Length: 370
Image (cartoon, rainbow, N blue to C red; front, side, top):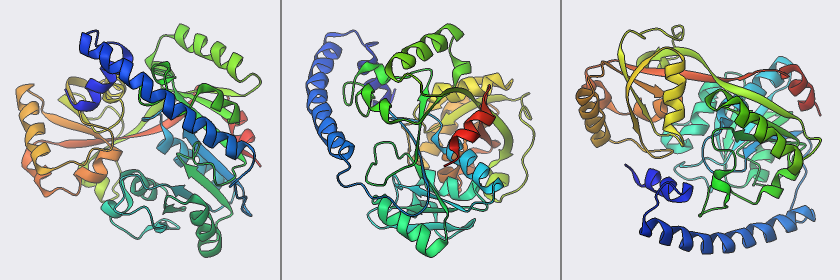
């Protein structure tokens, strides 16, 4: 069990030991200070202090909890929608885990990737790879990135990746994704829970998108929607699932080749390997595609894979009699850079995942219009 898993067991209350109780008490005290700081910061932005509006529309995609909710496939979908309407969107990413995100760096220009993954961070580079007509810029200062996008790249729409809490840049639409399997981060703000801010922050949202609704009981989804209706009445709420799109070998994915239909190779015992916020969610997706997942090997979110990790992956695959490895696209960004991946001597497949609306997609598209 890695440190991130242990931490989540404490936050969720699953760890009922005395040490777990002590840890939760200490984290609760820290949460009070964090919540006070976040509330003060939000009050400043609510008063329109330090907020800059630029000359083109801005759509923000974010969440209220730490961890993965499906922001990358949602950003991709929005850019595709805008592109089909004749716009030229640029994605503004913070560049988490980039070599240096204190600088504003153009990662891709109209689909042409200009830097290596270690310079951009995995998520920004993945967006650059899957958006053949859009541009991607990283940098902590989104306002500066916005001006570069408009002045140098001719952007007529900006899409902020993970932008809900980055409020210095005015946004015309705030889309908030909520993971139905853990919607409110154990009901506490960081570090006692996973909430990035108190739930009243959802009042700023223009649109709520529930993700992974197929991974929980329908009654839980219904209860979640009722609770949201009390917190933010009159705000549109849409239900989505993570839809697998294609399966690639790692070489096919890295070289931009065409993938195979989902379900290909499902005759092989698979080990799921991922460095994402919710590894079990990835496993459930694979099982839903008909794959025989014999073991799940989860690393921390945004994990930087090493040669030693490859040895551990091989050891676990051998121990559980797996005949192939399945990874996410985000992890493929880093694993494709390691030459030792070839030493596994077994197929490594990449599952491409998109967002599918269970209903209301056209209404969602209409709500995007500014």
